[in-house]
Image (cartoon, rainbow, N blue to C red; front, side, top):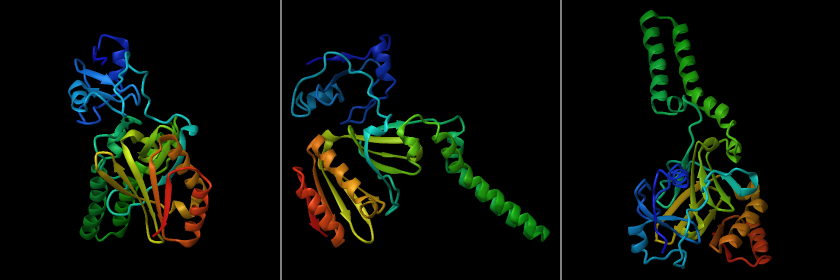
Length: 291
């Protein structure tokens, strides 16, 4: 077992600390002075106590890395990394669901105005403009002031979207194509991205037990089943109707890379038959049933 004590005076350790890595089991941030090990298979980092808790093994093996791995770049820098992405649907609650500690998070500060334009206070300012226009109109009986107040309210609400679009497109990554929140398959993991990659969440395939996709005329959803028994559910746009072939090819590729069980439940006959035909022509462990 190769144990590394994080020393901020060493360049490679400085590079590692800059990645803001976390123990995938406890969720604790790795900091200077911590003793850690790296799984030789997936390159995940574990605090020494966590490694002992896991029985000194991960990914069904016990080997650890002699040296710190090269910088683990979690952002997706080329289009070739992406197998498929689909926009999220609001469904029930937030588009991107609450995620357990196994997920890695990258947050990008697009400009010094980012926090100003993306907090709840922007809605409060817009509300003040609107109510100010109403109040002044009532007092002075001048509808022009009301119109001005409403105009300022709409401008205030427009600023965050304008800001994200302008600065998001400057990101030198695939995220510049993600105009809204998306779910994606990559050659490394699955993940979620907020608009233009302002915030990205990725999950190593080693944590996934299976994926379940449910398609119907009313809604489309996915359930991620983790190896520890936890489940995450989220809603997707109607990707099977718009991107049937691309989606199925991406699922098959992802399955071939990681051998993760994937099940499709389909409520529309035409798409059900095309999915059956596609899966039958592959050697994957993808299953399809009528919903």
